Image (tube, rainbow, N blue to C red):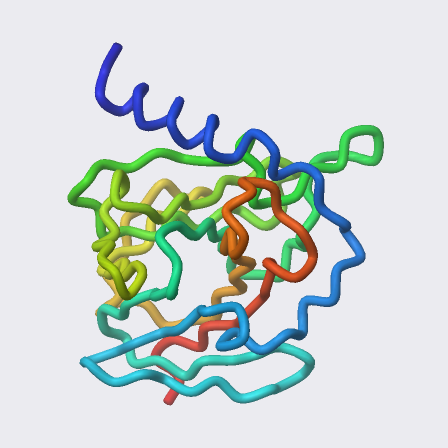
Length: 192
């Protein structure tokens, strides 16, 4: 079994219970309340509430996704693809293991799903997938966006656009997502 396959299995095992999520969850809890933060050039970026989304204004440069907890799952797209994916018969939260992509320990890219596809992908951010984890939580440095639709790797220095990010932080260690552990933010990159 390749290292990449082993990581994929770890990610799937981690997310096996994540499908027990209320699709009508209130996603307007503050990111800080969930232990989520964005840091760029060593400074925390404060979000503002705009058009119903907690929005971070970022430069076209690497940034850090951080959490007070050891693991986080994100699903990202250039349009708000909705928290629930799949079809009417089998609705699946975008943070589910069935959508998890695997990365190596030295990763610094963020997978950006094609919002028009019913099956997207997400990022498991943990020590096994490139995040730095210590007693203060995790920090994952994003240098590159991997775009599902085009297959291109785009360095953040060349990206200008909007990313919609749903995230799940397992606050209680249950490995099962509940409404209070899910948030949504918007990243406005290179527009300031």
